[in-house]
Amino acid sequence: MKKHALIISAAFVLSACAGGKGIVLTTEPSMERAFDLLEGTREGRPLLKFLHKHPVRFEYSNTPGLCHKFSLKAGKIFLPPEYKSSDKMLALAIARAGKIYEFSSQTGLEELVAEEEELSALTQARLAVDLTLLNEDFDKARGAEGIKTSFCAYVLGGTGYAMQQARRQALAADSDCQRPLDTVENQRVWLEKIRKAIDDETFYQLLYDRDQLRVKKGVMTASQAMKNDAELRGLPVYDVYRYQRTFYDQQSDIVGRFDKIRARELREDAGWRQARQADLDQVREEFSACPLE
Image (cartoon, rainbow, N blue to C red; front, top):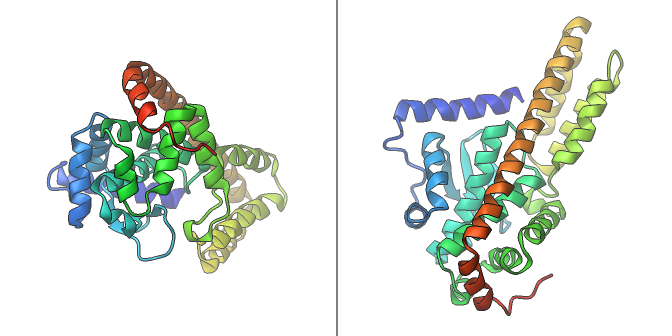
């Protein structure tokens, strides 16, 4: 929690110093063109405004996996190089990853959760409507099958179905993409165990087990997990108790903030679908041949 807060705070300081001017989100020409596309849409402009206030660098990944990857400690988001073939697909990928970064910044979540993937899939689909994408746009782009599947789920199956499909993918095992992801619901269960773990070894073990899961996913090194455990066990008993209460309160606040964000995003999506019903009808006709899983 503390490390994540420092990362996000560092981004805030950078944005404050820059004053929102001269922010460089990428040095890739293809990504710059994608950002220009986002700037021209109602869905993309608010996200770009956030990214310029709280900058992060977008780069192409040099590791396997057709997915976005995050290195918040380095202040970077990595996207698959396959998307270079289409500025529009790249804009969709940037929007989805950028939205997840926004959720993470606003809540303080230390790692990605499936619910962020659910909500970001909605943003990506609405942007695709704004960009008036056609079947041929997806068919000509390399690696766009997953984006098209997600878009079709939203257009033909609705918000709930699109979220279910995003969640299913987020919870499927994929070591290249550091999945399966955790869920907010799992964190609620874990927090309840933390609350009950007073004056015994359970508290130490709960934090240690969580770090070991992060090591297994590749988001934490084994040495860092051991260091965290050693530092916690080295605290005086009174400090451990105080740390436990503070830790529980902070993590509960994080979950509460995410609940509010989720409710807000769903309200906005419902309003958007109602206002854009005519556009959705046209898109459904264009993508009527999409198979739903």
